[in-house]
Amino acid sequence: LIRHGLEPMARLMVVTFPFWFIPSVAMLILSLYNADFSELLPFLRTPPEKLLQGAMSSMLSLVGFAVLLTSAQGLKTVKDINKVMVVSIGIVTAYYTFVVVTVVVSMGIAETSRTIWPSMAVVRRISVPGEFLERMDALAVALWVMVVFTTVCAYYFAAAITFTNVFRAREFKIFASILFPWTYLAAMLPENILEVEDWLNFAGNFSILVCFILPVIILVAGTIKAKWGKKR
Image 1: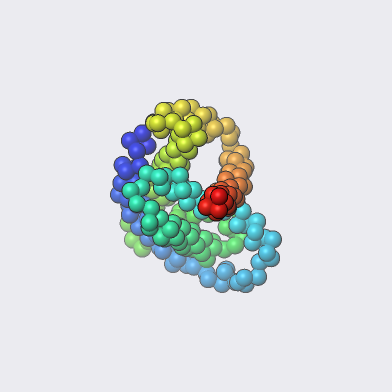
Image 2: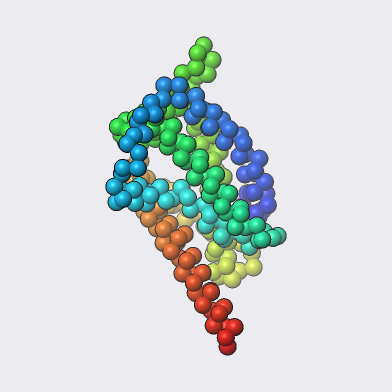
């Protein structure tokens, strides 16, 4: 898909978005039938160091803007890119907030902290009168595969574009082929779910450097260079 460029990949994501977003929200709403909102209390009493630790672990979920930073060069106009960035991050933040609140009020803090995939556990608990909806977890897995495919495409495309810029190549398709065996090898390295979690924690910490600190350094350097060039 990514070998054909940004436009077909974006079209696929636009088409598939409602097919996973609407059912996932509907399933989470169905899980609220026995919700206990007192599980959210006490509110805003978490120590700052624990808030920071939680923010570090969830950082990987909000680094999608790095894809836009690398793929924006393929857009016909960039005048609305700031608006697109804010709206995109706002939707993602609202969705994740909704997921976290739904899981906590449905399962409770204690059980949520002991579960590897809390959202999947919540979906398994859904009970509809008449039992006409069964095995909702199977539908959730199908939706998850769809989301993962589009996510991998976006990051894979961003990686190919980045290597194209680094090596000043004329075509990015060659890097789409070169990166595949290394991506597959990296996916095969974890031997169990615990090692996968370790890799995810490492990726989250590394993303802080690549997606937050490095762009700020580049922005400051570019601003200084532009002002210094004008003075000369």
